[in-house]
Length: 456
Image 1 (cartoon, helix red, strand yellow):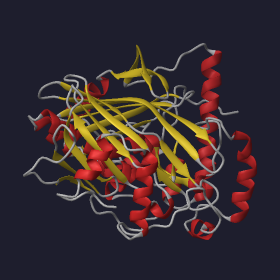
Image 2: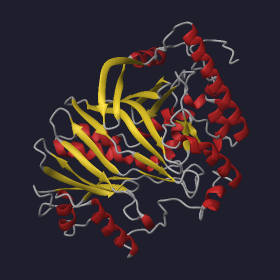
Image 3: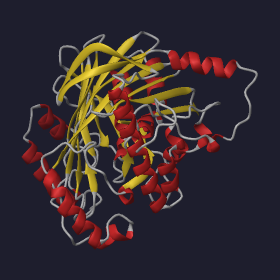
Image 4: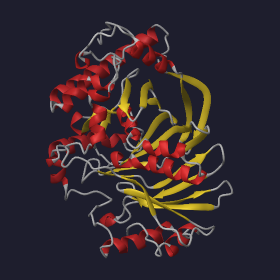
């Protein structure tokens, strides 16, 4: 079932607003899919071996690898496997989690529009559409590399946005990020939590995301839905994010609540997002609908959630064209993130682009990538032993740990705050007249706290 058209939305949105059961809604959408009202994609939500050959052709699992890995992973069922399991590079993509965080900046123009907008409810339309836009990239089923403690990723030359992210903790794995331009400042502390369920993995986005719109100082808080990676070992791997996304204007109390429909058999309901922008009194003002892999649209509504007479559904965001048959399902922006074209002058030696395991995988050398990954992980363990022996604490360079602990639906989170030192560093570099031309690709990856440390 596609997005509702003008004159067809009444029953759907009224039912949604009055809290129709998820079961009835899913049944309705399943019938719609079977009747051909949407692009039918046969998916077995429980997994199976019928499409294992397709996965093997994609370079993910060969039969002998699948069986041996399944025997090893069974003992971890029910556990958080964020950093406790060493995974084979054949299921990785040549990108780290820090770079993946930067993918949220592809449609940063939507935050520019939110800042320029005077209508408080349309601000939330633009801002939530920005938050939804990254899910097209999140559907990739390759795993990004876990960052090394102290690793960074910096991006420039994209719509006036400066982006910096840093791995601030290893156990538990935590990242902090900051981005800004003339319209907005984006700040995130992320601590992914996982639960391995055998052939699937639940990913809980324990984190705090704030966007400050600079014109009026409005602060927006984002709580995304959890994500489920299905058919990790048996069947065709696919990603779904069923549940609620909530964006709250902390300044006014207005909020947007959008529901990501769960995927069923034959792809019923997959990608669909529906919801409302509410005022501080929790009265619906604007309905929103679309698919997170295609587009989002909006329409003003009445207190019952019905479209206002004389209004029409208008598109606010549409996915950009993507490369055809890309091995890692990268968008053009993902390739841009991985390239040195978005690297600023005097790239930090701790930057993800410089990781030797990532570079080797990008060139298709899985053997070298696996060896380099093992070397980096052992060096990280050696650094930890050295730190403990010297009673040292790791201190991030660009972010400071605050005393704030914020609750999330999946546990409490210690919050890191951007300390503005990167702005000072970048200003000093950009104003320097004595910058030697250096081939950034020849810079040795160096996120380390201690120099010349043996990994023995």
